Image 1 (cartoon, rainbow, N blue to C red):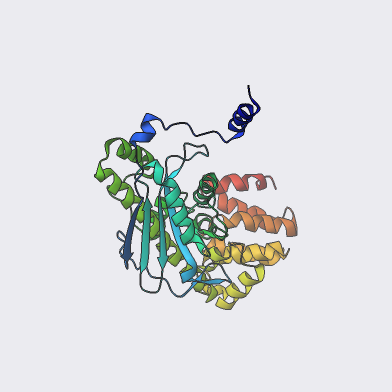
Image 2: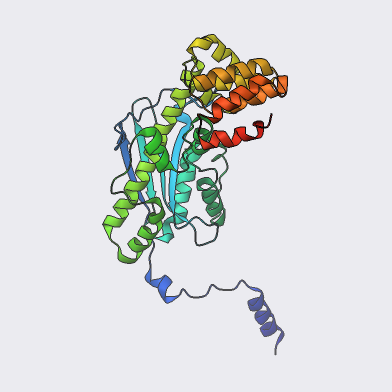
Length: 357
């Protein structure tokens, strides 16, 4: 073997490997462009309430944000896991101004378009504040994880995030666990004939297999309602914060359960209304404020007022505060006997430890 031929063989060995030929399936499938569905909305399709937002939206007890900075989004995926088999195939995103909502739906008609819808959505999301329902736990982490898989940079996107799931559960006693629960309990409507959230992935797989356009339309309709409902919920939450700031009776106890409020916020707001104007839950909140400051006499007095106005659980707090003041006092025994004879099993169980006083 000559020196030149040996050198040629070594160079061939060191050169980068040539890619293997595409499989028969890869050669037969040509990816198509993702689908962009855009629409403008002034009213929610089901509740018929306005989908506009004021220029400044209240996002907690002290903070406002310009509505133009908000991007409402919800996605549909092939599952709820974190493995490679879970990927988004539809991402809905909406921006809002003082007159209407602009909705964009990014749909992947096949798995080949996943990277395209991710890249487009991340571009929309840069320098925006995301608004989701439980999106901090699932939607955004899935976007970020899949974007990393494709080498798509997410800097400037997802850094600010309002998760309505956590916000609503802090300030509303209804504590909805799902978006459809929030729609029913807070927005006042239920979906008729809509594909259920748990069935969306199966509908997409059937669409991939059968190519039925009606399945795609059902998925797109489902996601559009999801995103538009986020706008309605954000408007409702903002209105609640504004009302509480203005001292509207009945909202104070809800808003002051939110972490942005301080005990002084609660006391100033509630006392400004006058005790005679406070409802049972307002009185209960004010009682809790005094209890945390170890003013047990005021806490017990306000808890009893709350109980007399119909908040049954407040009687337990009244008893606990009186015990801190007086120990095994006759007044505690009278209150316990009175409540045991009138309240339900839940309250009775909490009072049982005090029956031996």
